[in-house]
Image (cartoon, rainbow, N blue to C red; front, side, top):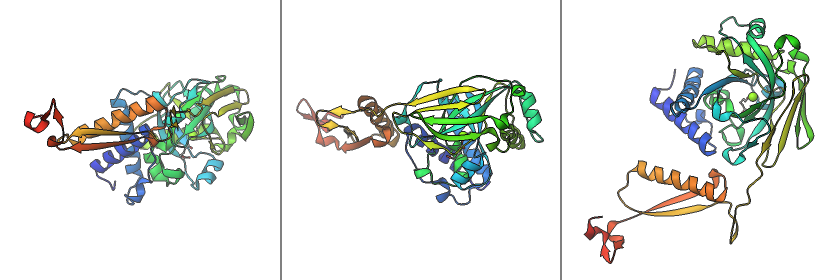
Length: 338
Ligand code: 0L1
Ligand code: MG
C-alpha cells in the first residue's frame, strides 16, 4: 500500500461527505498519484465502515464495468466491485430524490440473490448458478462523485464504484429455468426505448461477473454472504436521467421494474425561484472550528428543507463578531462577560 492509514481515512471521509451532500470533487488520484489498488479498496472499505458505524446494513454487493458497452463508455478494460447498503435501496416504482444526487445515470442489470455464500478463489459460473436462489431485474442508479464523471479506475473503486441507489423487482426466477445469456433487456426512459441488449453482454454470462466478484473477495479473505443481492453490472451503457424522468426496465421472462426521478422542485419566494439559497450567521467569536462546522451543516440542511434546493447550491456564511460589537439591554457583551 502506498497511502498511510490517516490519508485513507481522510479520503474516505471526503468521498462519503461528497456522496451525502451531493457535492462533486476532482478525482482523488490527482492529489495522490501513487495510490494503488489496495489503497483504493481500503478507502472503499472505510466508507462502508463509516456507514455501518452509523447503523447502516450491508445488503449486497455489485460488480461494475462488466460489459463491453460500459467498458467502452468509460475507456477501461476491467471490472470493479463495490457494496450496497440499505439506504441505497429504493422500492419498486418509488421516487428517487434527485436533489440528493449529483448527476445520476441508470443501468439495466440482472440481480442475483444467493441462497449460499460464495467464496473464491476458483469460483466459476457453475458454482454461482448452484448457489443462486433466484435472479430478477434491477435498475442501478450510479452517481460518480467525480466532476463530470472524469476519473480513473482506482478513483472509481475508492468511490464505491459510483454506487448510489438501486431497485430490484419484477419476477424472481430460478437460474435453472432460464438461459441468462440470451435474455433480452430493454430499458425505456419516458416511454422511449433508450437501450437494448442481452445478458451475454455481461462478461459472456452474468454469472461470470458474480464469480469474478467472489474471486476478488476471496483474494481479500472475504465472501459473498448468503442472502446478499448482487448486481452483476450494466448490460448496456449508462443513461443520464433528469428530474421528472420515468425509467422502466423489461427483461425477458423476468418482468419489469421501474423508478421515477422526483420532478424539479419549484422553490418560490416573493422574488421568484430560489436557485441558490444562502444564509448569513452572526456569532460571537471564540467558537471552535467543529462548532462552526456543525452550525454550517445544520443551517444548510434547514435551507434544503425550507426551499427544496439541492444542497450543492446552498451557501452559508459565518460572520464572527468581536465581543465588544454587540450588547444586551444596553450593556456591552464584553462588559457582561458574555
Ligand atoms: O456499476 C457500474 O458499472 C459503475 C462503474 C463505475 C463507473 C461509472 O461511474 O460509470
Ligand atoms: Mg452497475
